[in-house]
Image 1 (cartoon, rainbow, N blue to C red):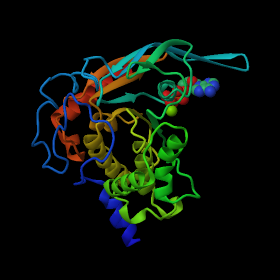
Image 2 (spheres, helix red, strand yellow):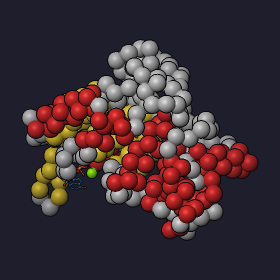
Image 3 (cartoon, rainbow, N blue to C red):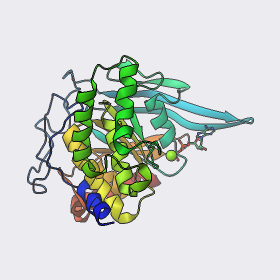
Amino acid sequence: MTARAEADGAGGRLASGPVTGPRPAADGPRNEAGGPRNEAGGPQNEAGGSPNAGDAAGHGAAHVVIDSVGKTFRRSGRRTVALSGVNLEISAGELVCLLGPSGCGKSTLLRIAAGALEPDEGTVTVGGRPVHGPSPDRSMLFQTPLLFPWLTTRKNILFGPKAQRSAGLNERDDPELDAEADAILHIVGLAKFGDAFPHELSGGMQHRAAFARAIITRPSLLLMDEPFGALDAITRLRMHDFLLSMWDQYRTTILFVTHDIEEAVLLGDRVAVMGGRPPGIREVIDVPLPRPRDALDADTEVFLTTKRRIRAALTV
Ligand code: ADP
Ligand code: MG
C-alpha cells in the first residue's frame, strides 16, 4: 500500500525530459515542467492567439481538420442524427476539449477522428492525410484503461511498438525499445511497477500505464474519451496534473472529450461546446489561462469567466 500510494503521488511534475513523441518544431518547449506555476505566464508562444502558429511541418496548416462531418445511425428502422455539419481545426500540439451533455455526439466525433467509424458526410484529415481506418499515428484512451490483464506493465507498454515492428512499421530493435520502455515507465512514475500486472496497480496507475502505452507508439494525435470520468475526485486531480505535465513534455495534439466544464477549462487551449438539434459544435471558446496550470487556477477570475461563457454556450 505504501509503495502504491507513493507511486500514485508520482504523477505530478516530472523532472525527466521526453524520450519520444513528436514535439512540434514551431514552438518548442513552452516552459520547464516543475517550474513554479505561472512563472512562464502569458501566451504559450510568441505567436499569440492560437497556441501553435503552424503544424509540425511549420506550414501554418492545422494538424487536424474536421470538415463538414455528419453521422446518422440507423437501427431497427430508427434514425439518430448523431452529428451534423461539424467543423473544427486543431493546430499541432494543441489541446482541445469537446464538451457537451451525454448523447450530443462527442464519442461519435472522436471515433470518426480515430478512424474507428466512417462519417456519412464530410472528411477528417490528420497531418494532411485523410482518415480512413485506424492508424498508429492516432492513439485512443478511454474511461477504462485498456491494458491486457495477462501482461505486465512493461509488456503492455511494449505491445504496440512490437506489433508495429512485426508489421514493418518501425525498425526499433529490442535494446532500443527496452530503453524506451524504461524511460517512459520512469516518466509516468511507474519505474518500480514494470513487472506488476494491471490488477496490482491502482486506478491512477493503470491510467498512467495506459498513457505510456498510447504514447510509446509516437502518435501525432491522442484522442481521449472521458478518460478520468470513473476516478475518485482526488485521483482525478492528480491525473489532471499528470496529463498537463505529460502534454507539456510530449506536445502531442490532444482531443479530449469531457462533460465536466471545470476539467475542460483546466486542460484545454480551447473548448468546443457541443449540443443542439441536429447535434454539432455550437461554439469554440478560447481558454486564456496561462500555462503551466494546476488545480489552483480554478480560483482565478479568468477561470470563472471562461466557465460562465461555456455555461452560456451550453444553454443557448
Ligand atoms: P456522447 O459521447 O456525447 O454521449 P455519442 O456520440 O455516444 O454521445 O452518441 C450520440 C448519439 O448517437 C446518441 O443518441 C447515441 O444513442 C447514438 N449512437 C451512438 N452510437 C450508436 C450506434 N452504434 N448505433 C445507434 N446509435 C448510436
Ligand atoms: Mg461518450
